[in-house]
Picture (cartoon, rainbow, N blue to C red):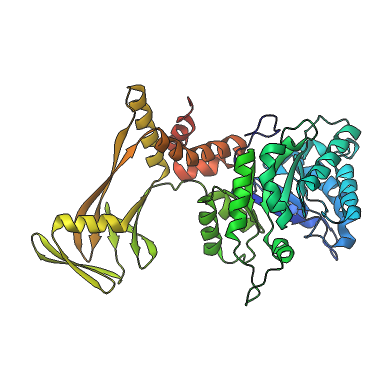
Length: 437
């Protein structure tokens, strides 16, 4: 990451927002209090008391008071980072001034909350000059309250074309002596307001998927040494859709995602972590089906694919409407083309350790073999795949382990759950591997 930045985390899995004041309740801060007491996998990496969209305009002044009260009381025990979201708008000076006043009040040391607050989230930013205005306000606040320079991080929500284009400027702007943009932490997608700003529509009224925005945010964050986070997934009951979105994001280099409920927090905290054990997948009709592991055999039990023995070395493999008569070697080649292996935590650690040992012995590359017995319609066949490991392969495999190590370092409240997931021995080995690099 860029030099001078004021945070240690390399990954943020969860960005959880809570209304700061709820009208009509005996305790308007009830949702803040509830969120502040989350622990373990239910607690996010970044908690965002939201004094913007999640809180009615008439309640925002009370929302600032609630942030101060709740964070002062519970902030010391909260296991993640705390980043309140304030009001801001690229085209409205009075809104920006309101945001400044909110941050000034929350950051006042006399109020008791600032010792537990890591930074602020700025929504509705525009071009890079607008980002600098927010940065300058934070610099003024630090000076006004006697806080260390750049001790408050700044995260922004990308909700306009101007903000998306501004991500291209970060690499050249961060670190200039005329600004303190090295305080930047998260770049967060805000698809709802982005859709509005882009004047985009769909026939059903649903949000466009915006894969370009997610890619550009991830690219901008990577180039500037920041962390990218995807926007909210509104269908809170669609857990599989949420998981699918996160899988797509990780292929773009974006680990984190907005979480709207504690249930989504649990899902998003666990999803990026390596699976406990490896699994074999079979590709059928543009779908990848995880095979059942039965006594060491990986079994396919669907209807889209069938296998029949003709004699000792002849088989009929039917894939959809296509039928192939094959010998055993040809069948293995066909099945290898249809299968893929998903490495588990223990596989990754074992492979990394094996490569490290080979490298210490002077070898630049080694072959790793993955094998199993595949069973279809009661017919079993041994298959194996060889993959060459070199330094580039090792570095790529290290990413999920680095994520795990980052989580383990910064979230001690999750240690017991992680040991339950993987086993203490695997956790210990995962924390040791790659440590010399």
